[in-house]
Length: 178
Image 1 (tube, helix red, strand yellow):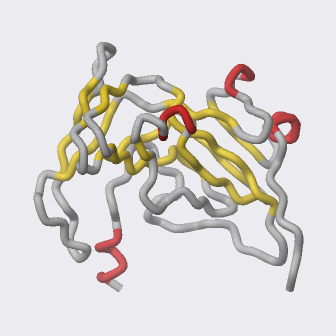
Image 2 (cartoon, rainbow, N blue to C red):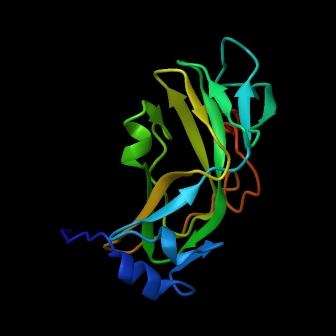
């Protein structure tokens, strides 16, 4: 089945707030022509082991990003999260880094920029830098945008990540427990 997939304009994102789209807190100054800027929370998770294992719960430590900033090391994975809680109905949410952030060599996701229709929670960011870079809490680090969906679908209902309240380390090990 073919279809036309569209990205919502900023005005359409605003119009659908409280219906198909929830962004809390929402500030109109962060609304773009076809996206909305999300901010970085003040905490990060860093895995403690040098070698990660897909079949186990990998140990991590929590780091606070102070107001004066935190220097990130290149080639190290940091897990962060957005300040904003989002919920999406009848649309596919997508996350991308802001171009200003990318031009400093900072990525905000390795593979997980694609959301599922029905997702609600905070977005976990897979932060990786190619240069040493100083980051700050509350910075507008990424943008969310919304695609229309075509065809019948079921809302996202994963017990692993749905409704999260914190940074989510990988829960892939649960797939091996089935």
